[in-house]
Amino acid sequence: MNRERFQQITDGYRHLKIAIIGDFCLDRYFEIDPARSEISLETGLPVHNVVRVRSQPGAAGTILNNLVALGVGQIFAVGFCGEDGEGFELKRCLAAEPSVNLEHFVTTSLRRTFVYCKPLVMEPGQPPRELNRLDSKNWTETPATLQQDLAARVTALANQVDALILMDQVDLAETGVVSRPIALAARVAVDRRPDLLVLADSRRGLHHFPPLGFKMNAAELSKLSGATANTVESVQAQATELARKNHQSVFVTLAEQGIVGAAPDQPAEHIPAYPIRGSIDVVGAGDATMANLTAALAAGAKMSEAMQLAMTGASLVVHQLGTTGTANVQQLASLLNPQCDP
Image (spheres, rainbow, N blue to C red):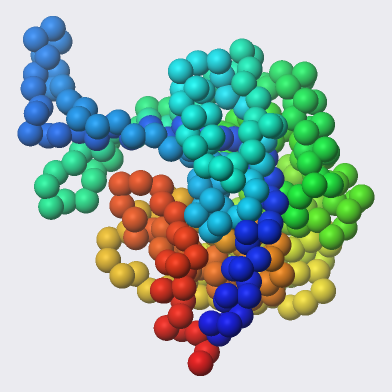
């Protein structure tokens, strides 16, 4: 990809409308100063003194953060939060970006806000050290009325946007945003509008999803196909078969080996990952990949171009420590341009 082509693709981002349907959570970081440690008089246990608290949208919100950083023109957040302090804080973080539309983000008394609470020990001259995380989740099925409400919002948005992203982050099926009615609404949208780009990802694997564009890792592909995918060649073969079966594109991330993409009408392609350039934190790499794939494809990039941009974004993010990072167009250009054709 030369500089002119990079500019052509990324210049289109400001015109895009992308909807993210998924589990938006609050990433809350508690920065701990170990120099202020003490022992509790009441319990005799060590006390971690927090000297700074910072919050940002997580899970599906991490994809949103990356789309914001890329300069996508309008981003629709479709999901829910609870009527609690964490929900207020999550909505405040989402609303801070002028490109984010919260018309379809629901505040409900029927759910609690999904929270990842991350205590970080901050020692001078050392990367942040994360302690045991404290998570708040919903462990009961999302009420049917809320599921149907969100499904109707997906249907309404499908005719207004260039792409839909489905991000299923929950550990227990049907307890989050991307329940069966929502996934089926996305499938119906594709049937009605075959040009609509839809990419889905789930931490539990995509075997329970209808045929949509899929983004997964090699272990999830193996689980879905029933065959081991442990080499680039085996991943390419299985991804090609799945893409042809579903008549939708398939993207498979391979950690340090890069990414494979397959479309129903073309052979699978492989783009390698960037070399490691120091300490890394892999949290958020998949979300950066999803954001860059979606934005690039929606802006008219070829599959190989979109995967190259996705690997560039992921490389930038994994080298950001103590946070779930993002990468903007200028950062992409700085890392990508030395590899560009003259």
